[in-house]
Image (cartoon, one colour):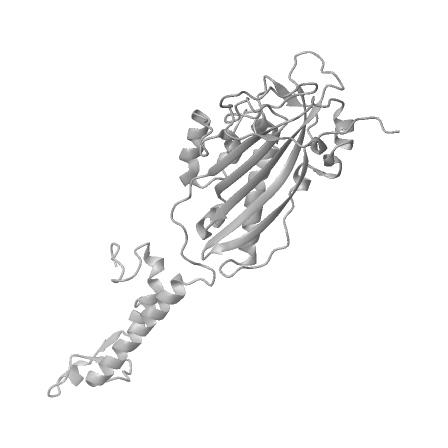
Length: 349
């Protein structure tokens, strides 16, 4: 046949392969070939010009109705088998916007200083794992509408986002955001880009809700081995929607950004606790994309008067938090950094 025919009514129009199995194909047409009678056979009274080479088991009106019913049944079966998948369910068409809270935690004393090794050894991070080793996948199994492989894919995508947004040195120092943005569902690009262009502490457009970022003019990593501890868990919260919740604490060893040699004992620790909620539908799992729908961040030591919408502003070794202003502070919320979260360098008897 020349040209492309439209698919039968009621079938998808995505291409010939989508309905080839439910129409009369070439093999059927060859099997129904007609044979012409010979000249002598056509001389008989009321002879037909052609005869069929195939036996038709259904004759008359009843036979036609039975044949028509069988064709409808074949169509319905083919469509059902072609579109049904044991784990496919209706999914969310559009991503939800991110809701975020970023809370600075102010210390009640001067920030302890020392070498990264001794600071880590005398802090709660002494038993944390280093880098990606601290972001581990839990045991998995299938949910009602998601296979085990899909659950694993969701957890791996969430883990990739956590690693890119919390541990990548180029992301931490503001040199790039590409590794983070590429993992988001395209529907969230607009909100993400607006957060970068005009950061606001409005619960929607803080850069620090999406990722961890410092000012490279003020601080630098004193130790590339960020300490990490936390958990990942998953749940099918509604049909066709898989949610992954990540709760991790990241402890960074920082020192002032200087052009000359850095002091060996001039480092301090900075802790960031992130609770992130990711959502996935079947299409996003195939594309390895995610919706980040909730981000709760608590980070310190910082001053409550420091703005944290565009970047985190750590207090370094020997520094104290600014006194709380009597009016509105730069941060909408502010907390107190527990003394137990900082290194205990006091000599022991």
